[in-house]
Image (tube, rainbow, N blue to C red; front, top):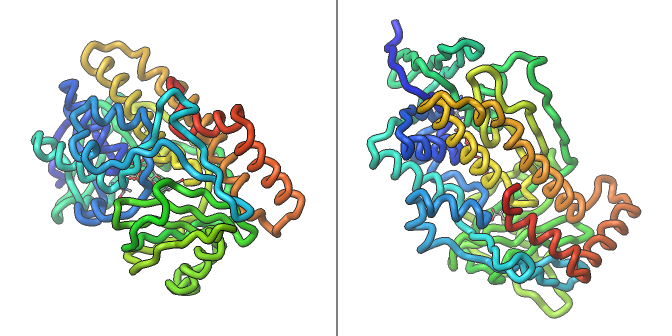
Length: 395
Ligand code: APR
Ligand code: PHB
């Protein structure tokens, strides 16, 4: 026997997409339950992305989620492209009428959203298991799951699949009802978090014949660094000393750049792929965030795309559930996909320009160098990068 209860919106996944959706719905008087497979400490400690577009920051602040973000977020008005041992600054704000990015770890966004939800008395269940979706093509969908050793059924008006790339929601849609576009890249990123002060105030995207490297940060004491590696590499072939050696080599400049080093406190290899599920909706199931699409991390877009989806979904669901207006939910997928594909292109472009090509193809290497020189010399080309990086207004 299952314990049965009802809600308006059943949200599968308590990552940024699911939690923000619950928050935005609650502000419009819509009831929801968020079901998260992992424990609270796990999701709040998991080191993920960290770059927020201007529009993402504005949305979080406008919805009472800006207090710690305002205090701890690091506003960046430029970034560096480094190749041939020389750095070139792209002045993001100057090229985009003052727009900037904010470096603020995704786990902080998740912790802020979790605090806000629990403080408001919202339903958020951690460590749910055996999640399955039922009758999503009817007007009475439900979610079955286990929690605290018991079976539960959550009856909903709508289900939001916010359970990321490895979730179950996407697979609940019958094959043939959606088209899935996939691009696998022949490289992966090895990411570390190190207790070392950042070696530069701004992010450095570095093109090197040994492979791409990225310098980022989390705070004045913590550096976040990435190295292009082989997707088949296991962590044990990357002891810390090899990572530092490789980072020093790739970031080296003609004028003697020094990379600050320190204890490595987190280490992970992530494969790189682009995926889009079209449409992002089937019956009463709406996909949002990584459940619907993933991008390679080179454009720093994953979290921002997730936020854009749920902004649109929250508005559409509120209109429909409160007043029966269905235009918004009918257009949900189409509206999200416009930005999804713009961002897919940008992420693919950044990835292709910066990574060591498969097989070290010398022709491709020459094309990359030509493109990098163009982006750093032409104001028009630099503006293309900048406006996509900070987030195009309205797309
Ligand atoms: N049931 C419940 N929760 C689940 C299930 C499941 N079957 N499967 C996965 N989850 C949870 C995960 O534990 C995770 O907390 O769903 C959440 C999905 O969160 P994310 O993967 O962070 O995805 P999303 O919220 O869409 O945010 C996108 O995350 O991967 C990054 O770079 C990406 O920044 C982007 C952001
Ligand atoms: C990060 O800080 O984790 C980060 C920054 C820029 C990216 C990807 C990740 O493109």
